[in-house]
Length: 233
Image (cartoon, rainbow, N blue to C red):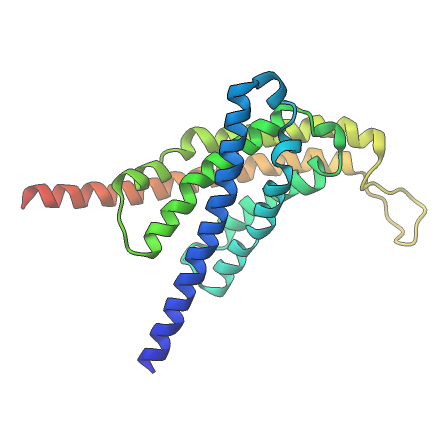
């Protein structure tokens, strides 16, 4: 019985390691592609981010839905709320707004948003990988729980910028909106929804930043305590 349970744990760890490795490679490709393009020709690169890395970003974000399932299935100790908020927020901006409206594809904010997302993930996924194999890296732990301080607020700001820019565009196209009369006997005006969504995303971003701050205190305080005990020996 114990051997069977241990084998299940090993398979789960292997699966999670491969998942994190896949995402790390994907976001690593996105990050270094965007950085190399920005260094070569920043004026052109900021306008062609969607063209350059749009497909790998979409693949990585679809696969990221598994993180919510991992939490629901108990494969990871992380709660469901945090991965759900991050995944749902990103996928809404990416698939509902950017992908649907071609005029957003050449907006610099989109390129910078992809760069911020990938910068977060090329740190986060390696941290999860070494944790799975019981390797401790004080530097990577510090980086994981420190890099979010500039990157998360910047990502929230860029997402909000794209939402605001998309409102007049969806007013023109009428995408996702429908008026009476119709078979459902109800009306929905998508630009109004975006105004409400913008407010709730700001509130959600506030709680996400607070959650990350609490996690940072726990993780880095633990490291400091461990270092202190080692020095006192």
